[in-house]
Image: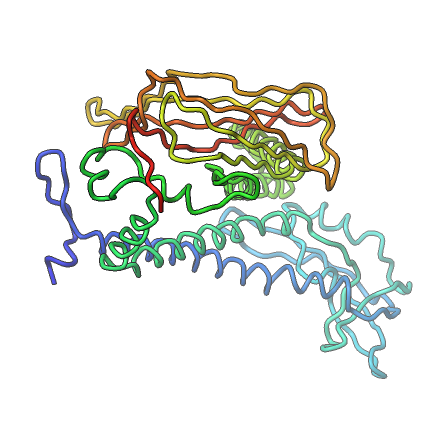
Length: 433
């Protein structure tokens, strides 16, 4: 058991050995705790504040009441005394006359007595006013109905915990439930889809070249293969949304606490000034979210197809491009790029350096319109230079080839889409399936 669930890693040179299964279980437990905290917070907020307030505003029945008296109540808290207003009313509900001390559904606490008295000074003893009572419990009535907007804003905090916890838990469970045998079977299945000469021989001859099977799995509608996009705009939007909700939810909670302190008469300008940089960062996240929403919703699908894959330097291929949506394009360009990436250790830190070593424009079109239901489509020639380095991937180094689609949209944020390709060395022979 200790060998299977080793609770620590043993260092061997630059490697650490340990239980990956325990790591997966620990990751699942962590996200389960995040999900549980978010669900508990969401339940408390909905059950105690949000839903009762919503019912009071939407489903309470209206009646007339007579004010019999007013008063200001007090309660002792850690940092002093808080005051809350109450009005004694008599009203008729469900064929019975009832009396109750009330104001709002949830007590309104303020920091000083004059502020509490100001809330009820408009209610005169002996006068009649509208009130609302709960049809399910006629003993409960309110004189004031309104939404507390900051409570609804605070919902983003537990909601972001639920989303993050759920996504992380699903990912961890899927990773844990995939056995080594299953992963090996998937690798063998992918290897069976290779379009090159004998897979074992190619693997021995080019051990550092990424396999193109994940790209070749998708047939095109015009050409042989449809290239997969590196990062879907929808996933980018989800990532920015989660970060925005998480950050602004916590900042909003802190701002709500500072505002409550000012309302109660014990606010601190130092605490308010401390929150300003965090609020500015939150506004930056909101701007990024709005921009990503515009890019995701306004820019339609981008599709690239290639006549053959993997690519070999010096040979010519046909590239098909399709852009859908409703856009007025200033320009659209397709570029072939190659980037080198190196991962190295500097002291105790691990750093990654990236450099673009090759860039060539394959296609450019300016000033045209993309209409709904009529995607803009065109073709161009794709040639990898004869002296180019092939694709390469190892633990610390990578040579990555990509096709970049850049769009300059009139009156809309610009966009860029990346499509990975695999380049084999010169002389690699493509075999029939």
